[in-house]
Image 1: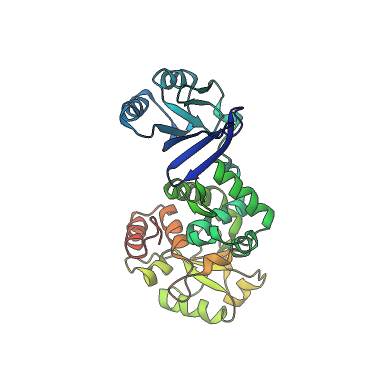
Image 2 (image 1 turned 120 degrees about the horizontal axis):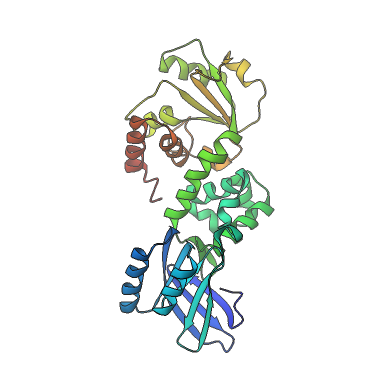
Length: 320
């Protein structure tokens, strides 16, 4: 929207967007975000809602097709999407309509991140107060460079997932940001963090955990998955154990006397170079958000039940 010739500035406060034009006149919108490509059923709901809205709605979507964009414009609904399509009507004084751009021409930038970028997303979700900290502090907690942090913050701001209230940034759409992280963890992050899968001689969960704790003493580490969930919100313990390490230790398998077993190993080891991931209210566990992430990515109904219980106790989805 900032690229439109009549727009001087765009300010976001919560769900309110203020568009400032060249003569400094201000026009306000209430944002309505819809994920995915829209159909006419949803579009007509937006049309009806816009007729009663004050201020008018600004529909924000991943992609709006040519015909649907024209339909929304015909009914005086302003919208923007990630491909660059838009209809902006500022009180009849200023008007812009761009339709027909394909979503692949300009996908939402949050889907372009690699693991370092998603570590920034995780850090923001794990501790939203980091948005008020200097870039170097965010970088330190996410385990990435300041350049990566700056690029991610800019992209999230453009996607209206974060915004400013006065001089402070805040999360505007935690649900979409969380969904982006959960999908990225399963597709990208997990495999990049993974050291390997191993087998320990021990089979009893308590013996396994005691052995790991003794071997990793003095390091920054934490249980993930159901081992951590049992400490944070007891519900279910699976046979496999996830362990995250902050430091790079090529001898960690030797420390544990663990044997590589890519198919049936009972231990998953991860090198998780993201300091904020090791903040937890319970000793020897990773952050509840990372535990929740692992649980929902497991193909195990009991693990998903454990995720729901963890969210109930730790308020992972809503955030604290």
